[in-house]
Image (cartoon, rainbow over all chains, first blue to last red; front, side):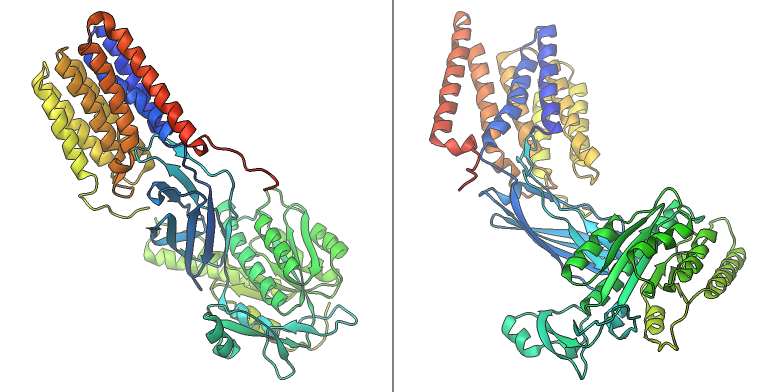
Length: 420
Length: 170
């Protein structure tokens, strides 16, 4: 494949040739000839090269830091100096440092430093790997595509979500394994330790043998179902803020789902835009993949479906009595309506509402006093909205996106009895 | 990538290209215009290829190309000027291979491409100037036959260069 530079060089050569003929001057002709031949020569000399490669990459960061490390190993013995590896920063991550590339033999190793400004489930497209000749005249692209990398960043409290009390919806739930350490727990298996793993969960002997940190998984008697509903309808906040809040809700939903799935609880997921898109209750690794794909698919809908439709549709897929977490901004009337409709159909709903106040843009024309007043009015309005929503169920006003302490304490709180 | 580039990256080839264009300008019919075009073309090209924006980097060779073409038009039509102008195009190809945003050693890696382009130019110049007027087409034909034979020899010696599909059962 010739690059635009090839066409530029050949075009300049052709133009010079025309000029030479028009002026009957051979000198431009001798300039034109190498320029016309060079793209052909580059194509000829690039015959043995290829950009087909094997990509190994992983996310090594923790919390807000995202550090992606990887190796691009070409299939053929090509000069790594001519392999151009380019990355695109996902929209919900920011570049913290310039990427590092090192050529070691035929391999290209890279290290990318990004930062997550808020909880996110970011899909990193595979790098664009191109073999390009040194003069930049010809390039070869790989024939096969690589899998994207999923970067998940949630508030750290989700690691401690294990003690949450869930409503039981199975008659004979039986014993299910959990990663929680408890008196009744028995050793279940080893797994790779998370960067924020508490030291008591680390199996130090196994880690010493393996050369990497491994953590214990235990079994305890535990069961329960949880349903996560994300409100993906457009609101009065506008598309940009809705998108941002939905991204945060998606990340939290996936983090919560992941935390419960690790305890082998059953998790269901639904996103409601115009219609309800559901993943029925299930547990296990396959369910994690299903949920991950569903969360990735969740996008802001253009048309807002009626709240009752969400509740009616949910009843077709999920049994009544499931502990239900609803992610909504509570920014307008339709989002308020969801909770009573869901409660009427037997769902025990708690609302996790990402606060739009942090996402609202500052008004540059206001002086500091007026800005403080506007800020206060917005907070008061938000408080009144939260208070109104509390009439139908518990609401967590999620102001600090990197903390879900409110949700964790709500889920752990002992219940007096089933309501609704 | 927003990393800052060391100043010396790509500087040597830029200076060589500038010096060569100034050498050509010395023989040009309008000296100062040729010098101006040479300095402006190389300076802008060297600056553009250091800018992070892909649009500027893509446009970087345009200015030296215009400068070289402009000077070539201004040169009196002699055999020596033809040779010098042709070598100028080769120097420009070397300058393009020395991209400061890629790993050093680009001119070395681009040597096969530059050599083939240089050989083509040398054959054309040799045919046009060294052979008697009637034998010029003969020289071009001979050069083409030699080039085709060389290409076929290379492809026969290294069939993997043509590329082949892997068998589904292998």
